[in-house]
Length: 235
Image (cartoon, rainbow, N blue to C red; front, side):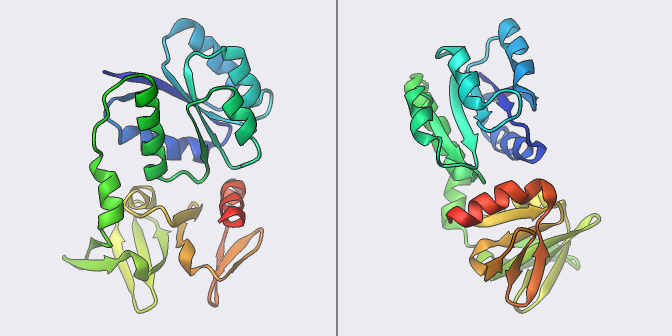
């Protein structure tokens, strides 16, 4: 059974993350995405939507006010960088409350919660199991596949059509897109810039503009700032 859903978030980056997660669940059908919540109301008048992934702090109309207007249908999963709306959101009888940055594991649990509420069958998800059982991946570099342990990765850098995987001991270069490589990493890796992903367990300090890993300073992109600082301050 296909579950028609939409994503409403004023941040393009947040929409991209959710699109990636949705694409990994076969029975989720993403109908549309919106940065303007007002525009979403027009779609809801015309099409049946079962589930909404809804940001809370948005200009024009907050996710809380949007949810109040819906009067219980379709179902809502809140996606936000702020913890302080949790109590108010559950008073609206939403399915779940996800804190950004949202890992696929946490997203998957929310979807299963929705399926339980809606009496839909749940299926085991292979990618979730991999996140817990695999401690490495193999990357193609110089015509051979090199084993890289997740715990050894300090940060990952995008350079045109290639990525550089920095460890304490070496630098591995492979042809890949940073957005695609991001989906292969465990939840403790965080995209902080269009060109950088960092291992949060390696961070020694951070400011409003960069993170520090030992003596290395890695910039935080402007469009990533709210999500990154929200994650690090609540870690």
